Length: 476
Image 1 (cartoon, rainbow, N blue to C red):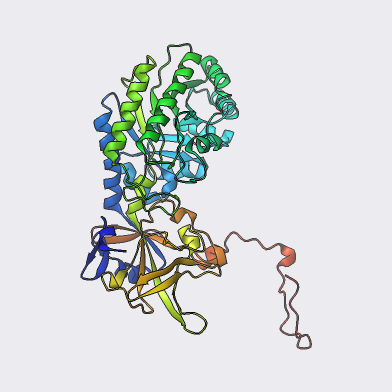
Image 2 (cartoon, rainbow, N blue to C red):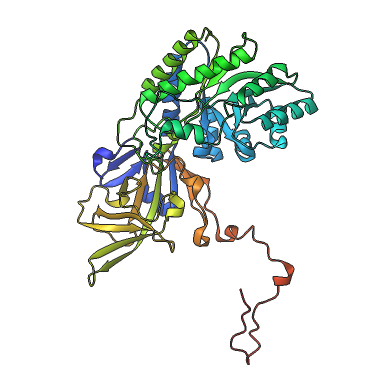
């Protein structure tokens, strides 16, 4: 990579990589590797880029950024966002628990996702968390739980707009159109079920329909996509209004997430190589389209809470991943090849086994501006093929050098797993020149902590005292 690819919170000083004011190689030495590192300053800046931009363009009511907790589900990260005023979108028991541990007010939490249990719905109602309905079955659970608790539950309908005029390929899966992907995804109330759902809501004594929600994800950075999504979303809101008797107006609307990260270095998205709109431009086009579409349907917008749910846009550039180069191997017989073996893995980075193009920008942290001298395969530690970056230019490498993968702040650490019984890495938070653990590394003992050995298998499987038996191991 070139220094042109370096952006805040990353810098190169005296030939060494820094995140904020922390020397990345020194962080590796102090905390060990592999290691995730997150910039608090960049996280706060990213949140305010979106919150402030949408506030400027939505004077009608409150703007509520509902940060997608799944993108980086660490309690300290959530506490930082809570401190700044960020709400959150949650999926399931675990994320709701994390939101509460992160200090989020229940009024600023949305319970989203499919297959919500009655127990989860009941807890949300008790807390005062609004529930995003995904099916008729969930509506029934909500009614039953609200009746049991003697409360009236606030609910939002999750809609799946038909993007009739949009014939664009998805950045996630370019072989399929966005229109197809947004309809075939499991989430959202099927349009064919919506009339029945709305009729039941209009008659319910226990549920209060307060708004509408849609979420498509990171299918496109093109503003035409957002215009189509929001116009067709409002058409469905008008259908809901009609089903509610014609005088209903949403108190809140959520247009979901899918906003691209500023520099859009994405390992989980196939197409990123075109310009990313600024938060300001996203805000202008989304609010204007919504306002105009609502007016065209004869609906007011004053007082409506306007929600957005960024995930990668909040977190992607906040993080780096540090690994140590352990072994340099060279082949000169059948082929000429050099492998730089690291102590990290594809299973920590949520990438495939063969990456002919590096999934992330990378820097040798302790030789950040050194001249490149050869191409190597940067490989991981497991028994998989593990080519993290094939035939990539590097400076002269030695055992002990520190490799930094950039832009690993979103949807990377949560996917880490224990393949080859590896303990998962920890995460360090930096602010200025300060650094501290916010998620400690997993221990080897913890890798096996959930294993249970039945009593019948608890006896030793070999007998060292039986000198006459040279093969005393039982069958595995």
